[in-house]
Length: 163
Image (cartoon, rainbow, N blue to C red; front, side, top):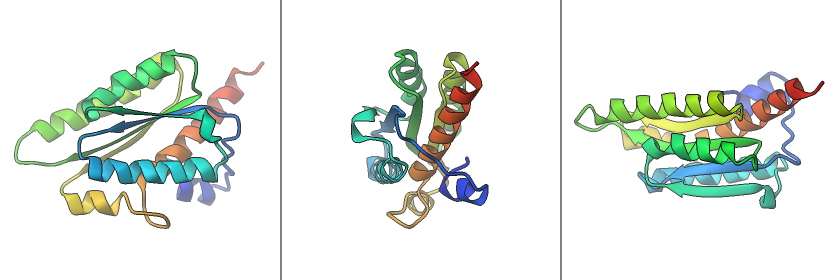
C-alpha cells in the first residue's frame, strides 16, 4: 500500500478534495477495527475529503467486506472504497480461510467494477500485533494507509479515463 509514508517517500501529494469515499468497517474485533476507522477518518480529513463525501458502513465481519465493497462500487456514488477489518489467528484454520477469502474478494470487487477498493484488513498472529498496526494519531495505523491508497488509486483511475 502506498499509504502516508509511502506516498510521502514517493513525493506524492494526496488530494482528496471532491472525492467520494465509502469506508466499510467490520464489527468483528470491533475494538481493533474502531481504531482503524479512527485512523481512516484522520486521513480523510488530512487529505481534504469532505465529511459529506464519506459514507461509513459497518458489516458483520471481514468475510462480508467484499460483497459490501462491490455493492458500494456499483452504486456509482463513490470514487473509492476502503475496507477495514482485523483477522487475528486463533487455534483453527478458520483464520486462513477468512483472510484469503477476504483478500481475493476485495481484489475481485475492484477488478470487476473498476472502482479502487483499498485493503485495510489486518491479518495478525495476536491482538498485540493488531494493536500495533492500529495505533492512535502519530502511530502506525493501517486505516490511515488504506485511505492514502484509495485516494491515490482514485486519482490514477480518473486520470486514465480522461480523453
